Length: 78
Image (cartoon, rainbow, N blue to C red; front, side, top):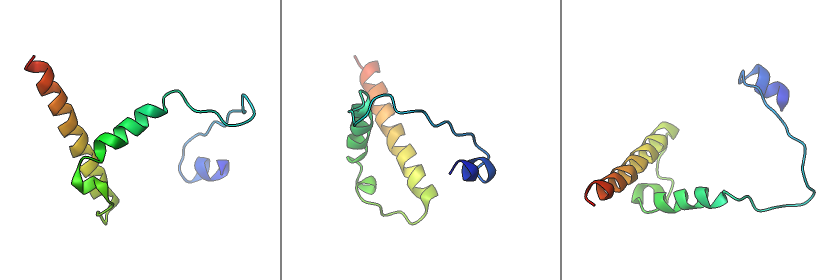
């Protein structure tokens, strides 16, 4: 894996050692879940309709832009 990343992708990879044994819930996981919740309100993103990855990326960017515009609009109108 490390060889593939360095030779093909031309990136460096850093593997950390396990701090504690077992499984632990990450403190910031809710941020990712909240973002997916927001994105699921957009019909195009509720299912994977797009054939090309670039199209899906663009629709995610448009959805995020719309979320930010709504949030900015509510701040300005206060």
